[in-house]
Picture (cartoon, rainbow, N blue to C red):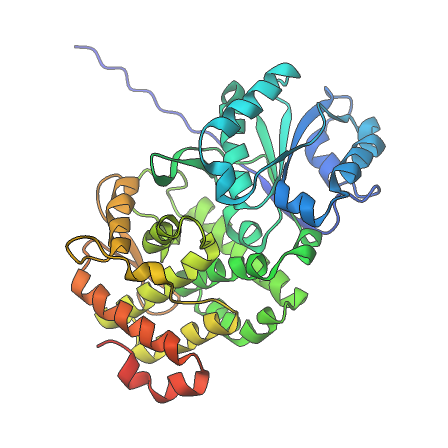
Length: 405
């Protein structure tokens, strides 16, 4: 028998840019991203896909994009076709139809693999269109312009993309790093209240397991974030983005070949809550509930102090999150909470072994490989009591009675 061993490394790199109004006629950041540093290089052609929700909030955006490309065409950038509008949220990730649609358009216009697909939208659109881009010619360069707080601080930053399939969230997908990411603050100005706060839960998630100082700042900023203070949100997004990018670059497993997903604290239940609610719950809203449940679970295990939990829950409530939803009460024929089915799907997604990120003291992480459903039942009951109180003074006064032991 003969065995040939082969190994090689690939150097991935991309830039995250923070700016505002990148489609202003005199704004040349995107032109530099597309054209690159080499004068006289082959012209950069691009397909542009727009989240329907973004266009509804900014109806003049397609016209502004056309005008911008017209101004910058001398830089060697051009539209390969009229910008297309696609469904946002989970609706745009329902099946392979989006992949077929984008693939056909790329073929029609003769898009080569050194061209670009520019994706402007929330996390669902970035996921779905990014998945299609990763398959065309085995990978067309994608430039992401996240338009929600959640996408700018979390969903738009990673190396993953996917669509929902077979009754599971993100069941079909690839690991494909973007060519570049542009966080444009102008897109945040028109967000509705739910979309504004959606990214806040992801910031709490990463702070709880990676950065205690950031967590303290988030708790202190909760009322300002609730009032939609732009400076507070800009600080949150940049700090959260830095932590996510640091994990991708230095965490040792950017393509998740192991069985641990350190940045998925609170997500095993969040994904299932989205499914159980038929996506009535947005991702950020489900993550807020998942983080609250896992915080109480960690406290019951003694991984964090019980009195450390309540200020974090209070801050999430102050930001406007509901930390209890009726789908948590759904049970199967045996009386088991249906949300616990998320553990099975999470285990499958990880490769067969359960590994749940949990705080080991606030700002640090450990992994759990077993889960006690009786303990979870105690924590879920406690969360329902805590959220029913919904008032800092009331919760503080009943901390001993409300927090599980």
